[in-house]
Length: 218
Image 1 (tube, rainbow, N blue to C red):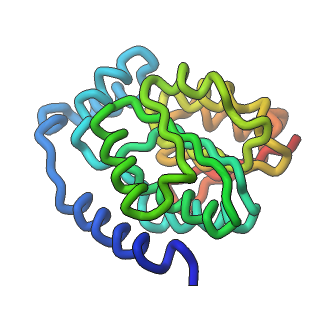
Image 2 (cartoon, rainbow, N blue to C red; image 1 turned 45 degrees about the vertical axis):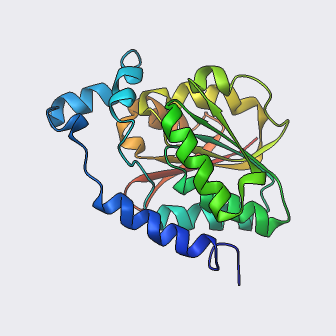
């Protein structure tokens, strides 16, 4: 039995994924796929884009959530950083791993205040709020200060164009063997080029079709 597979977390995750699958939003209905693709790769318009997405569920898949739990447990992670909390589903998986590892600290960053409030409520309902600090604001500022000296796991799941910049903020604190999970990384070709480069200091592979899994070599 684990925190992930028992109450209160397991039924909470089931309910939240059901809510996410049923949710609809007119916020981006009038944005063409081509324009959406352009905005996702923009380093100057991401705030406007994600402001429009403030009511949109942007969760990881169930499979990616389980992967995050497995990676955090198998590496005995104690310090985790998350870029892009949204409503907190991925956060719940990683916080469950910290609980089952015996404790730790997860620092998340989310731009939209209403999503921060919802995520905090979900963490409290799941019984893992004591393990998580969600910082409200632009991650280029919120994740630039007061990070653990050694980070075990990094999740990139915010504005895709900022993946290289957020990685650069925390890179010096990634311990050898630290894992980086980048969701939908195909929208950040600059990031993929960096972590896949032979001299980047990472070993990196695509995983599951929508995730890039990288390991810090040193």
